[in-house]
Image (cartoon, rainbow, N blue to C red; front, side, top):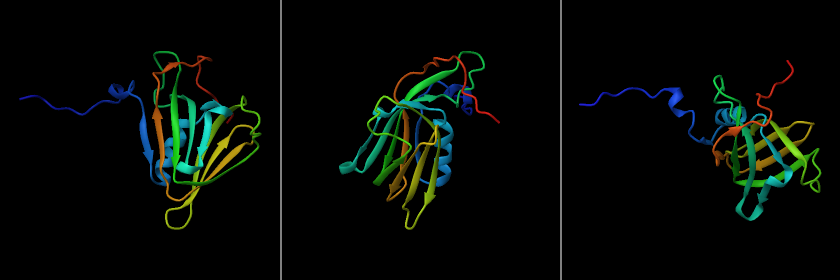
Length: 157
């Protein structure tokens, strides 16, 4: 007879993330994981016919505190489904090479499961996404790599 045991946190460290948010609490978890992600503006798209908004992020691996090795990033897809409209402020759509930094995601529920998901960016930029039903997917798509700075992002207190 084999012995069973609980998995440890350390056993999951190198696995790619695959998360889905279906309510406001779930969005807070994904928001914490995408904080300080960077991407060129050219790496986001809204497929109006598919009702999908997606971004290819260079995500800092907050889930792995990097106490024994260098800080890491991983490329991840952030996909928002059931999108009815997308608006932005503080972004010039012609500046496709502009590097954006995600600070947070905030969900404001509306009626019957609809609502607004806001992606708050550094430098006073914001993307507001109207959704019919909340479904946000975060999926790592590459192996982790050393963060170019070698350090975790820091924010003034």
